[in-house]
Length: 335
Image (cartoon, rainbow, N blue to C red; front, side, top):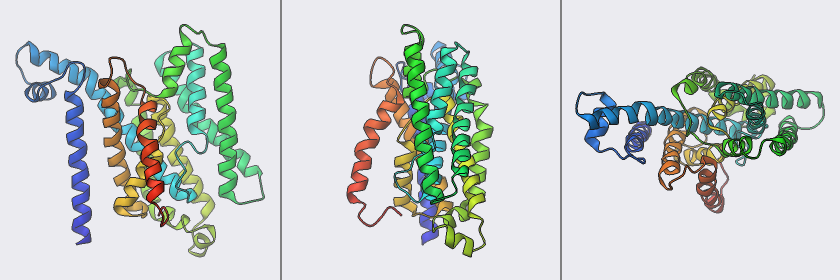
């Protein structure tokens, strides 16, 4: 019975994501009918309407849809990994400063008037550098709980990166660079092109594969370092590997979409309510729910107003009340 239920849940989530994706392809400033969408998606010969639909689907909406699916799945997976690793339901993918570091890198790239690829590379390197600095500083601290030291160091490094970002914003051109910086920091997929997505795919896949291979060890770490050592698990190495994998995922998608909050914080809670805390079951469910969720949010971002609404605003507006509701009903603990 349990096996059928899990298969049914997985099938239901996959079908839901596919349905949401098709709806996202049809909606927009130029809405497409079901027949026009199929003609454009399958590149079937037809009239001028079919040719326009093909251009809209393949050149505009499909790259954006692919980016939303990847970003949502990646942030949800990274959030689940961090929450399991630190045994804290309030942990999100930016707990170790990766988002702040990526933001600083991208802001500096915009300040230097680099091309889009250069800005994305700066964001990726900035995110990895911030977490590397956290690991270096935490490694120099010999006293105290390792998890607590990592979290506190991440807060400090994130604050420093945020201060540096504010300094660059003050120095930036208020008519050209500052609007671009502000919009990037709020998160958006408006300018995503296929060339932007391909470089991030290997990093995201590598990180997800690593988390999948470490799934049962992550479960053991959730019981504490002493229990892990008793079972023959080297807690330090597994923690470092998990952090590297989750950071690689987060930095890759942040370089594409900007700083998108709340996805990695809220989605793992929803997934845990469905399948429990076991990381082997939690990871794929988080990926599916996160992918569908961000597609919905991105569709709202480009349809609810005449101008593009940043993703970070919508994820906060949706995520904050939902998270409060989760906290209100979560009397028996988060796991």
